[in-house]
Length: 362
Image (cartoon, rainbow, N blue to C red; front, side, top):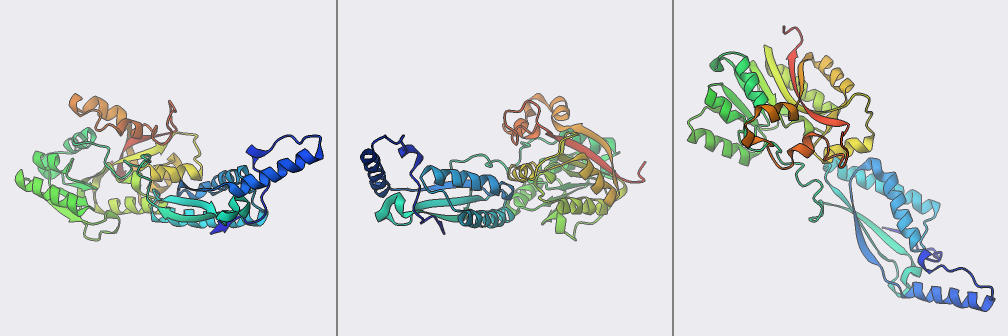
């Protein structure tokens, strides 16, 4: 609980130019004091839990309090900043889509605003009316298989000889069509409900898809020498450079020496240096991204090189059937970076297909 119980300054909306007569000034001040004692106040401010914005949130709260004649002291501002930083960090570690719930009320209702305003912080889920992160955890890819995944798999040889690992397979958008073509397919599915749906659909269509339940990043059971590993929807949801490096290392471990890794990932455009607050908001929106140098460093570390890099929007819009484009209502704003940077014609990030191969693979 933070509060400002010291005698407040006059609220800005009650200030008037002092009159020349001293009795009139005293009357106005007495009236102001009475009005402050009569005022009631209670409400809630809900803010995304982005630790990098602690300073901006502090300024917003201080401006709000000052408008009500409650300009915090230096000590109170320091206490406010510390509690903001700790609470935002705690919430962000739990989920990039957590919210800070800041409630405010009178410290002493009998004294109105003159008795001070108390603040209380807690963590909450996104408000129901706030839809900014509503699709962040959902697939943007619709129901059809990715044209790039299908084309790449076909280019590697006879289907029966090209084994495929589908990482983050969901309900089998890519796994089932690849298995139907004749590829040996293994699917990594983290959600048990999705795994059950995938298994039911595979069985009903008499298709062989080997399910590997669990998190790919910590899944010792995922082994083999796959000719192709695909992960269209994984990297935008990883939350740290360490997790991304671990993902590439895991992928390198299960690929054949001549195998390919096909990824969907957001990349920053050359010359763009993102601030921490942008990276945090990108995590909340499900579009975590690399800079080109960050990607190159990770690939060098694990022994990959980029064989090809193509815009997902450009490729899929020209290779998918007309009925399958766009894959979902939110796909274009997400894949072009406009969900993170609304209103920009040319956002500094975009979604790409990366085809990576182990170094030494000709």
